[in-house]
Length: 84
Image 1 (cartoon, rainbow, N blue to C red):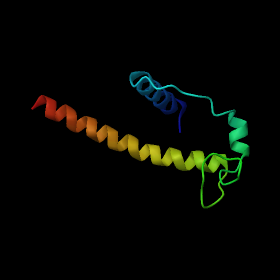
Image 2: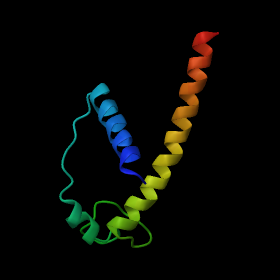
Image 3: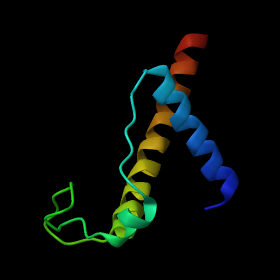
């Protein structure tokens, strides 16, 4: 993924967090997350299979891309309805 696309996604997420006045808390360091197994007792996410932090991030990115596509489609429909 190019850094331009990543930057756009980060800006989009930041705008939404600010729009909904969400409070974010640190989840620790990236290196610490990537080194942990998600299914371990110290992890905060329960999974049937043990995934590394990097594997979890990859699967979440794929899932978020799907939601992003759905959101773009809904925004397109909204614009069309607003015009009509």
